[in-house]
Image (tube, rainbow, N blue to C red; front, side):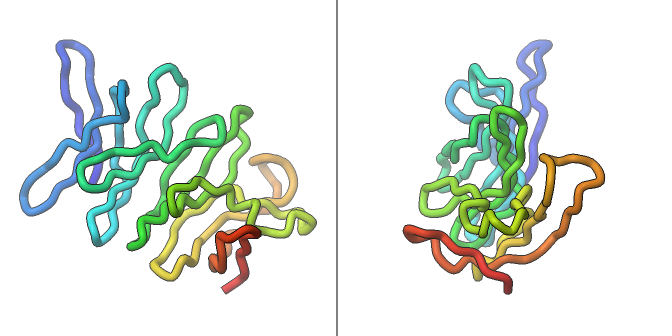
Amino acid sequence: VGMSYLTDGDRPIIHGFVYRDGRMTDIGTLPGGTFSWAQVINDDGMVAGVADVPGANFTHAFIYVNGVMRDIGSFGGTTYVHGINKRGQIVGTGEDANRGERGFIYTDGRLVDLNTMIDRSSGWRVAQAYAINDKGQIVVSLRKGGVGAIGRPNRDVSMSQVSLGPRPVLVPP
């Protein structure tokens, strides 16, 4: 997967693609968009990446399954994709309108802020989610203190998804 440069006269167009069995397939864009970048793929051919959203100054993450690209939403700003597993669960980083970062999981058609799955009284927050395996274990970056402030403590850890029920829970591996 990746992105390719096309041309429309003098204007460059960037579209995500899937390369399989010697063929490169343009996966297009979100409706009305002009940009997409396929970033990750699982063994079943589900693709995730980012694409522009008409009228917005940021990109949204998407999932591409069976020839259809779907916007997975946002927290009011840009969403970035970092991983996808066999179940089609996507993890990444989402920004709010003030550019505050939070790690997310997209699962069962819902975009979930991973901070809703940890004890807020710890002072830590999930800033980014880097990868997810087929067991639902997620590698995240935890931060304590200011939003992305230089010199603030950061720690990369693995967390296991136990439930996304009424009260989602993450526990250490």
